[in-house]
Image (cartoon, rainbow, N blue to C red; front, side, top):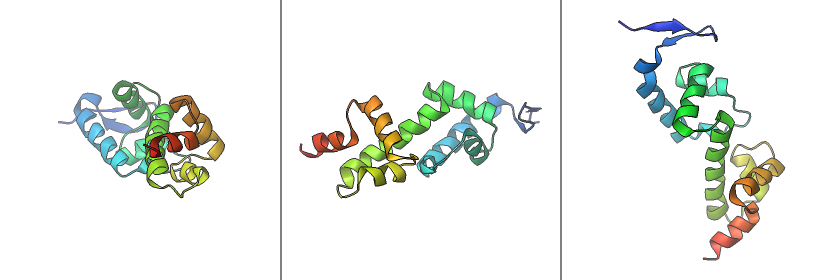
Length: 130
């Protein structure tokens, strides 16, 4: 018999010990589908997509990835953007930012510099001249 409980989100979901593997697999499928590229993505969007609620998905991300939802999404987007920077040489930084799910090139460049210690253009130049 399945144990269920109601959360403060007012949704009934399976108890976490029963659904942890299912949730991990659902999140992996969601990432594999590159759904993180959707602009304006919220934790509620992710929770709905993987069949849980914000409370569980937040706890899952915090425990499995050791970061917040926003940091996790930005890291996925950053990895995607770095691949585009190196594989799509004719694509502008602005187009890469938007294609990677960032709302603006300026926010992307700021996040990139904080994480990588250089601008996206410098990253591209350093890594394509090898």
